[in-house]
Image (cartoon, rainbow, N blue to C red; front, side, top):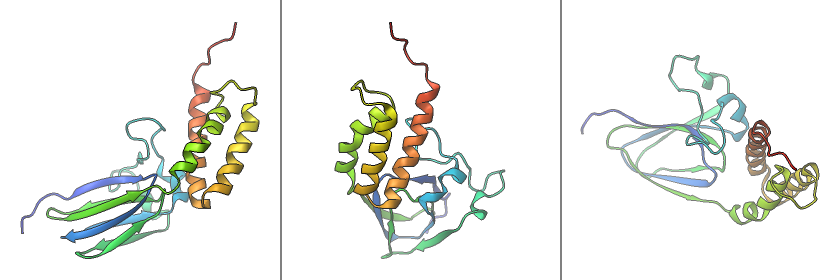
Length: 174
């Protein structure tokens, strides 16, 4: 068996459910609840590194993973791991590790249907519905349409996007 550098998948989360089937070699995975977004300092929404942490695991900063409770899994051939929507994970795969990942988003249709409320809540529409009202509608419909952990991830992203929008200059109205 060849030695070589481990492939690293930086600390990130996916907007989908996922299964990882390990075929050969091994893989080490650290998994954390979606509730840790603040501690993991994600990059800004709509940037190339959206959904990735700014933290470097094993970097010069004090290890941020010591502050939060998580799980470690070592996948060997034949093992399958389920990754819930929005859960943070970091993966080390040594040379020769082969796995298949299947992802799906059972909430895609709901999220698409709610996109109009989201845009209005961000002040991006002109329907006469005040953004504050649209925001309340968006939050309530979201919370009643998807499981609570998924709603939390989507609301975290919404508030990050809202903060970014508030920093952008608005065109003045004549």
